[in-house]
Image 1 (cartoon, helix red, strand yellow):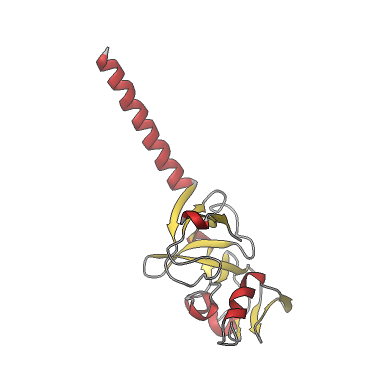
Image 2 (cartoon, one colour):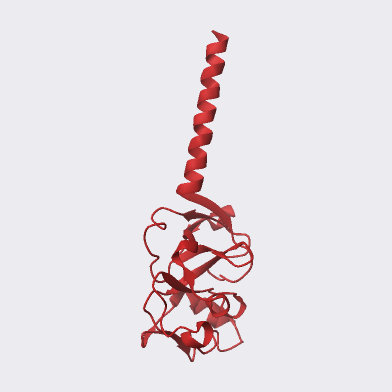
Amino acid sequence: MAKSESWEWVKAVVVALVLAIVIRYFFFAPIVVDGQSMMPTLGHNDRMIVNKIGYNISEPDRFDIIVFHAPQNKDYIKRVIGLPGDSIHYEDDMLYINGEAYEEPYLDDFKAETDNKPFTGNFDLSEVTGYETIPEGHVFVLGDNRQHSKDSRHIGVIPYDEVVGKANFVFWPVQDVRLVD
């Protein structure tokens, strides 16, 4: 009788481990925010859940916060600004996508706190990437802390197949548990 009960426990543990691995690999993964490039939206050492569901088969939406594989075998977390076919430029601290001005309310608090103006320096997509418009299957990303972020202005456009998933839930530290967008 004890042998049968032990075997049942072994089977239950194996099933639990397989389920945990499948969920971690295909659906959700934890990530630790490293650095200040996404402040004030995300802080250094915030722990988040990355939602991988659907990101292998569909494209990110504008202003999603995504995790992607970046150079030097690192994962970065940034905000999607431009989608395929978009023309992007910044002028006088205003984002223009396809010639239309876009508000970025998630930057308002940080803009108000900094004395270093402009918060986002002027640039044109072609100056920083060599593309007139964002190529098919790619996105243009920026960190929310524009003055301290290594993003598409430095590493170029991001291919969809490098996108791990969308990050929108902070689970640690406990006092900062929240959804972000």
